[in-house]
Image 1 (cartoon, helix red, strand yellow):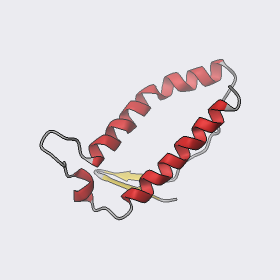
Image 2 (image 1 turned 90 degrees about the vertical axis):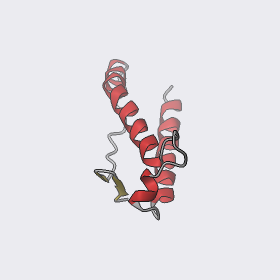
Image 3 (image 1 turned 120 degrees about the vertical axis):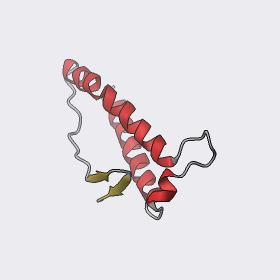
Image 4 (image 1 turned 180 degrees about the horizontal axis):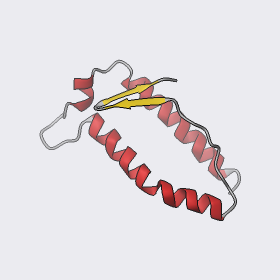
Length: 89
């Protein structure tokens, strides 16, 4: 488990960087535009992922502490305004 968790965290880091690189040239209206009437926009998908992750964070922290693994404590420089995601990294 000691090598699996850091590998997954590194994968998440790479996916995060790739997502922000992809979003970098898009306008706010493009991020929130739905491709079809019942389809989610990019912004809605990202917001959903954020809310899902945030809802599990207390459980993840408790699990890490219970098993003696406290994570990397790697802060991410991100500024999120209403309807706007901007990476500072």
